[in-house]
Amino acid sequence: MARNIVTLQGVTKTYRMGDTILHALHDLNLEIDEGEYVAIMGPSGCGKSTLLNVRGCLDRPSQGMYSLGGQDVSTLNDDALSEIRGARLGFIFQSYNLIQQLNVLENIQVPLYYQGRNAHESRSIALKLAERVGLGQRIHHKPMELSGGQQQRVGIARALVNDPILLLADEPTGNLDSASGVEILELFDELRRNGKTIIMVTHDPDIGLRADRIVRLRDGCLEEDVRNVHH
Image (cartoon, rainbow, N blue to C red; front, side):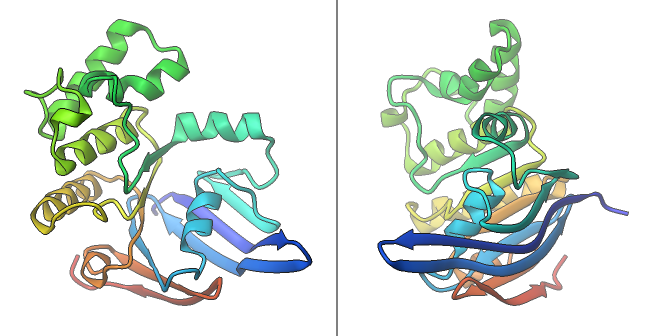
């Protein structure tokens, strides 16, 4: 049986704005197993980003339980959540979030600096990942010397550098032209074939169809959880 990576039980997330209580997520129950590729979809303001933040240990649920890789992380303090983010999660952003002063190889290594890995080991890991995402010939280039698609490849390599149990991607092709977007999605397809667990927020139904499952939210509630049949 596949190992459970993500379990949400009765997760509710509320925010207070003045006298108003906003329900970003409401009594959400969801399980994701190791190796699954899940697309989170729904209209703007439906709770997609909040759900990604909770699962990425960037935010805590107001109520309910969130388990990551068998560990209840719902009530951990900020330091413990930060440690989990660095060691167990990989984040891929729409806007790449690369450090402009660093070259490709250095950007990929950033999470390893925070883990205190030695320089030789960090460089070796980053070199392998640069090759894996097709940037072996570009390791000394700065982000401004790369296309959008190449910058996102750096972002994916950086997300993989700590061998995370879960990859979280927020509209990773949102800033790319269609050809570059397809190349990035093919990279995600390959990661899934290699057993990575992926959660991707997207508004694009064609992207959703590449995943194993589509989880659709509306007004902070789980509206639909369907399996695609193409795998």
